[in-house]
Length: 264
Image 1 (tube, one colour):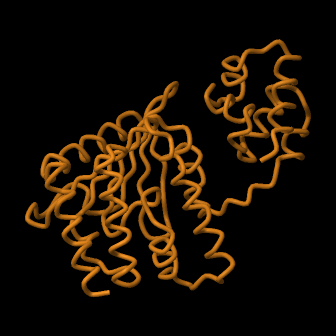
Image 2 (cartoon, helix red, strand yellow):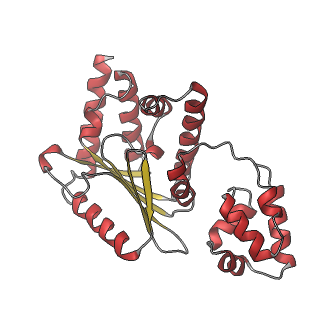
Image 3 (cartoon, one colour):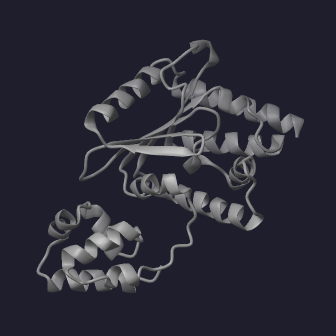
């Protein structure tokens, strides 16, 4: 995106004699999010822009001239998506498919093709592009720190073709072997576990309390209550305690990918 918007925000903030932290406090945002907007790395949501206008006394200028964002996400995921871009640590749980930030293009397209009611090709293409944009947070070699706990069922649910599955599983292996992502399998032999009802994402930040995001069929919710987040984190930790070690997990994922390759 052009940084004209971020530059203008910075000019208004300095003209008001405010630091990034002071503006963040007044607009009920985080300092890091303000910094990302000013640097041109993020586009604020409409609600964020309205709060910035109120905090700076700029009428509705920031809201009216909000840059167009071509990214497409489900309405219920938008808040979680914004938080994901700011997180310093992310822990994902994949119940029935590989979590979004770890998906390859062909796998993402196959997942989105299963939606009901069916999407148009144009809408599906926009969603795929957004999903791939989300995965760019992994191009930074360090931040965010990412853990991925995958139910073993994820490997055995053939989404797309055998070739799509082989490519996707090897992508997870590559991320794991490079040290960029810690990937663990929760084996079927573990039986019932505390995360078997939904997908779950836990996120930590530099300058705000951790949050959790749970998702089910056409619904998602960001949880910011400390008690709820702690309960969900404990459930994640309990499930992780039954997972296979990293090396064993990657070996099993690789072996399953090879099986798909043989069937392609």
